[in-house]
Image 1: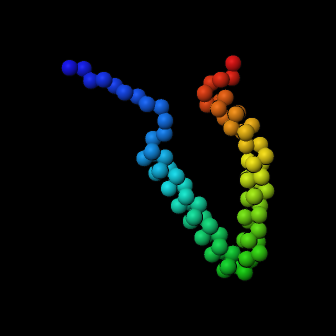
Image 2: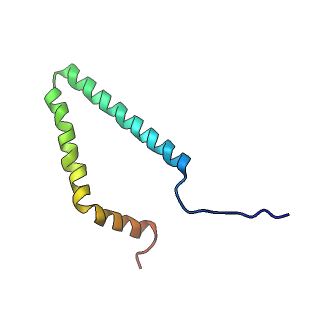
Image 3: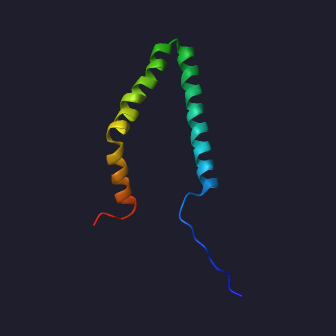
Length: 82
């Protein structure tokens, strides 16, 4: 008897959770390394300026142009360029 193959669109929860956890842990590790080196070098003001630079370089453009970025990635990823 032939088995019925069922395919579903959506997110693979186990894969998503694994990727998110790995990315989060790597980021957390980088934060601890930066703080440790900043404290050891006596350069805590420079270390504290990092989150400010993050807001300017990453978060602000994402907030301003997020819809355009999302639309562009959907066009490329879904082959809707025609």
